[in-house]
Image (cartoon, rainbow, N blue to C red; front, side, top):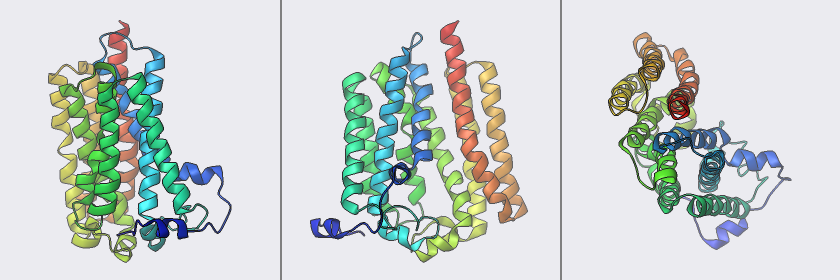
Length: 305
């Protein structure tokens, strides 16, 4: 594990001039944006009437800041691991363009800003969820869990699934059943999404001594696990529909998108061909945006009616 003494932090020196792109890259922008986007259906489902645009933007921006904080702190903790992996070796810290001290302060600043905005302009519960998610992601998943169990991404995925909970809590100050169901959608989506990418980078994880599923259990077990995890998703959308989260049209669209995800995962599993892994990964990224977009738009149309 990384040595967190003051000496080890201050000893790191930059070997190049950092640019704004480095600071954007440290936030893991795709992941941070995805977490922020998943707040929107939570906001709309918790609202009894059309919410103010200012509230929607505040929740979105503050959650993005909190998620970006987790990304920066993750790279601070993982700087030694990132050096060992081809996929991450060109990140700002391994390349020395950003020092450990700057990365730590940057991550903490983003987190304080995001949490403070949620606390002041929404509810204490929304702020508390963002704090707990970051602590879980940085201290439990990144610093402890990642190198110790093949179930790392399964358990750690909970941190990235809190968007709907933050959105719901920001409006109502409580957590609805539908918000929890959306949480579980992201939670069960995360392993097949990440394992599909991990198939491509199996050797990278093995080199860095990270027990990611393909590096420990092999390709066949990973392909099977990806498929079976996608099978958990359709029942969640059925439960959301029964809970009144969206209309029959929204339900049909989200279920169609979900079965397409299942089908792509089945192709990977049944074909025993790893060339299907990246198409599964790419679709999984689009899938989450689409299904949450469907839920959000469906609810938006209902509130506008």
